[in-house]
Length: 335
Image (cartoon, rainbow, N blue to C red):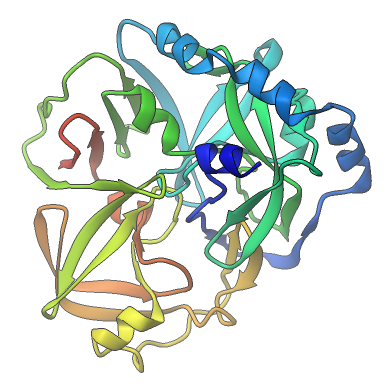
């Protein structure tokens, strides 16, 4: 059990989406849904057998040319339409702040995903608000545009966030897949397009301005460095966050802004591990005189103090074409 969880990673580090609406809460999926999941339970040994040779099969399945997939912004975050068995559509949040592919329980049932017997292996997924247990399964197949992966390991949530008036995806395409199998990944926010490249070397395009900075992959997600007021810190570059630049309470104290900012009300934080109102989370906005990140310097920058690991989200990235170059380990902004 320990070997399996170490190999595929038990953590989902950062997913947060917000919107207006009433909070119903966070809790386990229905007993009926759980019974359907359990009807396709397999042993740890059978799971390992089905996964044998999967990595090589996925590498052979990669298209010879890059593929471009449209996305839409939901609650400010990029959502693509992938497909599962029988080519049934499956909306997925393209989340560079998530370490692994995650399916909601209902999507896993519809896709006939086999999961390992929970008595043998059970995953723990960590979000920005809390944590929850889940199952380990196999999605067979997974299609992204013209790319069909024969099979791919996934986590299946056994909990769900419940809220009215808030649109958010149940499924997450994590950062591990492009990191492992792509030469670069581009999210063009103005054009609403994601590009998965496999053999091509990344070259900046025709836009007038470019900036770049190194990134590193830690715990399965991309980290970059930021600096302000003489303080340097590391944060997740997180397309799964609707927000801009976010810091935690400890960093706010180092920057001397811990007692600043008015608490934001009327928003709902939805994350793996919980649901929380913005006022309960003490979400508040402060201004830093200057902040350096991703090869640029930004004056009078608004920064949110919020729960979880510091991160830079889609609200900051929304005006850029953003590329993760996995060969050079650099992230590029073009505009």
